[in-house]
Length: 171
Image (cartoon, rainbow, N blue to C red):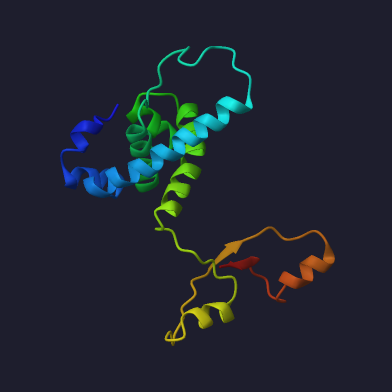
C-alpha cells in the first residue's frame, strides 16, 4: 500500500498524487470526515447488524485521511481498478466498491467547501446570459461510425445518397 504519511511530508509528492497541497488536503479531510461519520451513522441505523460494531476484519483504509487520499488519487491518476487494487494491496472489486461509495462523499465535501460550480448550463442562451463578454465559442465534435439502421425511416435520416461509411456527430 502507498505510504500516506510519506506523501504527507512533501507538498510536491502529495500534489502529484492527489492534486492538492498538504494544507488543502487537511482542510478537505475535516469536511470529508464529517460526511463519513454522517454516512456511518445513517447506515448503522438503517439495517440490522449481524456483528457488533468493530467485529470482522480491519479495513485497509482505516482513517478518513486514507479514504480521502484513495479517492483523490483515483480521480487524479484514474488507474484501472486492477492497478488501484495492486497499489493499495486489495482486490479490484474492493477498489470498485470504494470508488462508488467515496466519490459521492467527495462531491458532497467539495460542495460544502463551496468549491464546485453552482450552475449547470443547459442551452446557448443561458450561457450567453451568464457570460455576456464572450464573443467566440468553439464546440468540439467528433464523428463516430454507427451501424446502418434496419428501420427504413431511421435509415433515411442518416443516408446522404453516397456510398460511404455512416457516421454521426458526437458533441
